[in-house]
Length: 139
Length: 473
Ligand code: FES
Ligand SMILES: [Fe+2]
View 1 (cartoon, protein in one colour):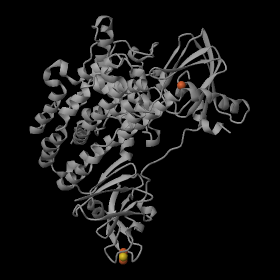
View 2 (spheres, rainbow over the protein chains, first blue to last red):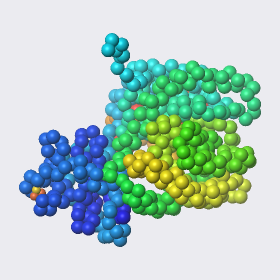
View 3 (tube, each protein chain N blue to C red):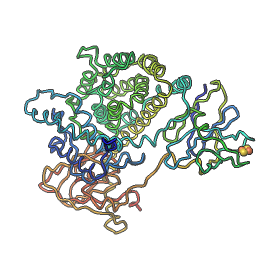
View 4 (cartoon, rainbow over the protein chains, first blue to last red):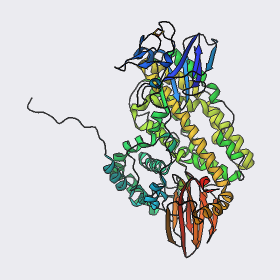
């Protein structure tokens, strides 16, 4: 077994293990389905990290020849956990298998929800509405 | 069928009902503001600042970036009070005139009101973890073991960010005491969340879980019970050991971490998640305790009693492996690999919370150490306001002698400006500024603070500047 840690987004968002690149993906708006997927199309090796999602939401559509890959199958493929922007994935290959981390672009359909939502500060006006409230009293 | 039943409706409170229920719970006299900084051997008094709660909305969980804002601190304080109504506490100096408080705290009325708001508060307090951690793919026993093995370096690292913050503080003793205070809500009732999981009937692992508790309870010899050992640590470091004496100095993240274990223990549908957390705490505690011993002895010398920590170094060496072999793996064996993702989630949530706590604590020490600077920053920020360059919302406040603003924090930076009188501005345990007319302090976002008026009257202004650096030209 090989355990690899890489980024969910940005630089280092792809790990290549035994010739297959893997990326972290999310296809649902609410971000409830983060998973690690092999990003090489089974047809002729097209870039599945640039895939779109079929209308029924059940398959990825490869950008090269339009081949379809079941999402349910992809989601089972690699046991993984994401904490913040860090992904840890376990691959069923010998522990000394080489793994290289690099960057690949990922299509919008595969990063439907950003892994980490960032909300701005409340507008100063909000705080003004109830200064005693947010502030409590004093200082 | 003529006897048709109404459809089952799971319990849930809408935003308005929730706010009203929170107010109803928190207006209990036990939870009102204190006019002292410390609680005095009264385990039932916990300041919840109900006067502010009516303005808060706990119906939508905050994003990760907002979890150190005031509403989250308020939610953690509420949850601590609610969870601890399941635990038995008695004043060290005897029940005496606290008998009424005792009855009130454990009364069915107080407990029922707490239980009513608990599910919503838990969603609010821990909801960000749904976003912070996800587990995917099909896990097997083998991939799980490989993953656990890969965690080893994370459990045996160097001193934490917290230890570094203490050792590099300009007032190391104060920083170390502030840290011990953060541990007190957990360690003075040590293992209580865990004990929630030995009730019931679930086979051999139940007895394994029980053995861990026997260790924590010092085999029934009171002087070796871990909470007793920690009392001695507190006392030898110049602190008192009565429960929640330092309630007002608990940071949001310290309560968050402790409450999270109660949350897992109280809600048994999270049993498997707790198993993951148990494995990780047991496995990482040895090194953590070693660093604690080093830090405390470096600062306080030999006078500090570190038995609490050395004891954990000794007994926990095997607890990690025991937890794995006797608890986690047999449970996977019995209940299937489908329970593994919850265990993984427990581990990673705990790691996420450790990071939150490390960041929060070191920021608070920097805030305490930086008080002279924040005091000086008053001048340029106030100048930016009086010159009209920035126009932040303003609150004018007049308070009488002795008025104590119980500790809290703000969701953005604020400027406090004293118009007349004297304010003692408190920024952490044993950390304060005396502010006179014309002076003030920049109050950093999310940093715990409070104040007491030391003159007959004090007139002051609070400007909600949002980000103070934007006032500096
Ligand atoms: S390579 Fe993907 S469809 Fe052909
Ligand atoms: Fe304040």
